[in-house]
Image (cartoon, rainbow, N blue to C red):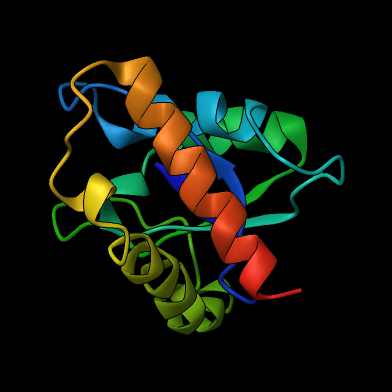
Length: 131
């Protein structure tokens, strides 16, 4: 899981096994942030539409922007914040940049610590390219 800024550059990266849901990993990913500045808004897809996640992030001062799932009964957003959802392509661009590193795509590293190190190395190279 990763968090990127408005230019698509990495802010926080967290690697975990494939079994936990993304909503559970949000707080852990935000704790591993590369920068000291607090994050104001977090944009995610439909999987991040959770009342519990909204409450947890509101306690830390983060606003979650995610469209409602189709099965949601009570709507909590009026659509004004969803205008920012159009910028979600920037995080997708960051993942596309990570796909340029063959060692990450084919997952040659079998141990999580080694794979995390390679992801951090890829993030460093992406950041160095955009200085």
